[in-house]
Image 1: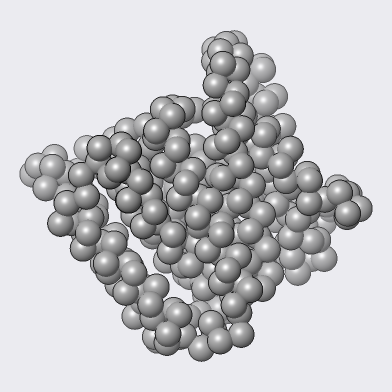
Image 2: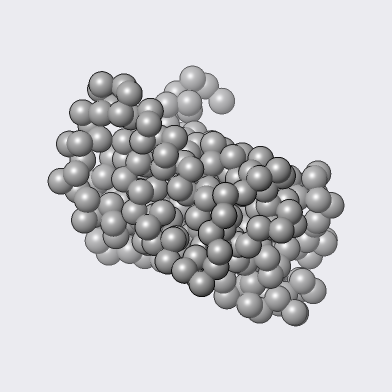
Amino acid sequence: MNRYFFKRAEFYALTAAALNGTIGVFTYFGLNSGISHSQVAFWKCFIAFLVLLIYCLVIPSERHILFTLRNKSMKFSLLAFFGIFCLYFFETWAFKEASVPLVSFLTYAAGGITLLLSSLFLGEKIGINKCLSFIMIMIGVYFFFSCSEQTSSNYKGILLALLAGLGYALFIFLSKLMKIGSGLSVLVWLFGFGSIYLAIPLIQEELYFPSGIALLTILALVFLPSIGGFYFTTKALEKGEASNVQIIETSDPLFSTLFAFLFINESLGWLGFIGAFFIMSGLLISIKTPNQAKLSS
């Protein structure tokens, strides 16, 4: 792996995947500390918004960009609904209903939508590599539905994970279509609108500030997957194709499975790992496209 890789969209997408892979474990600890899934989703978004807002207001250059971006507020409101509300709310709820590895893998099952939309509206070529990558990913997902015993009693968790994945897939496509760019000021707008959306499900709950283990896990969610994950995702979308970013971020579930195995002793079983093998193979095929091969030669 040469120095060019660290400047490519693939590197940013893989970094985002690794950071996002921590979501399941931290959410697991948060939910088991007694806080509801709605509270976890809201607080990790709202605290991230406050942290980034303060930073951008203090730094003159970021403050200028932040106020300049107000002309794109309608775009940010739409993107935040799919990329923040749908992803955070349904994924966090899914972790309450099903295992971390299962939810993580199924969240990315909707990624084929990004490939289709990117081809139709962004002019991105699908090509043999992307088709083969997608087919292998779908084979992997098939193992989860047909072979994994964990799916037999977790249909609610499956549905919630797929809804989260659908929202994220649309976010990736629309972010590229609308050319929102990247940077911390962009995240302020996304997390700001996302906090508004995520506050709505809390109307029937008693809103309280988390403490103890709940607070520690939410802070970890704020700085690793929320700020870090979205920063590198938007950076990858700025530099690369939306379809390729979506495929590469399929490696997220592999990190999730590893973290779940190490910290909460969860695994998918051998059939699940066969599915993981197919998904990982699809990822590697996607990364090594002909044009990228020239860069590494």
